[in-house]
Each structure stands twice: as C-alpha cells, then as structure tokens.
Length: 64
Image (cartoon, rainbow, N blue to C red; front, side, top):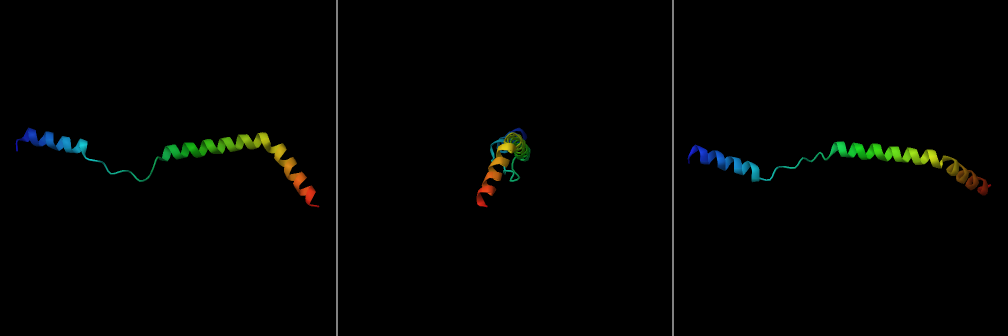
C-alpha cells in the first residue's frame, strides 16, 4: 500500500469507527440539576413554611 493511501485509510477508520461510550455520565449536568432542585425546594419551602406549619398543627390538634 502507498503511504498516502495508508494514511488516508487510517484517518477514515478513525473517523468512522464507533467510539467507546464513557459510562460516567454527564457529571456537570447532574450537578446542575441537583443544585437547581435544591434551590427550588428551598425557595418553595420558605414560601410555604407558615402554611405547612398550620396544617401540621391543625392535624396534630385534631388527634387529641
């Protein structure tokens, strides 16, 4: 085989061969999802804390 043909064949195989997938996953994406979820839960809890306390108090008072 000629050197140029060999080089082009090698380059073609490198480009077209399926690559092994990285099994670690998308770490920055998961971190972002986790941080955003924690932020949303914290924001909703700070808004709903008085109502949640009233619901819990009334539920406990109805047991007695």
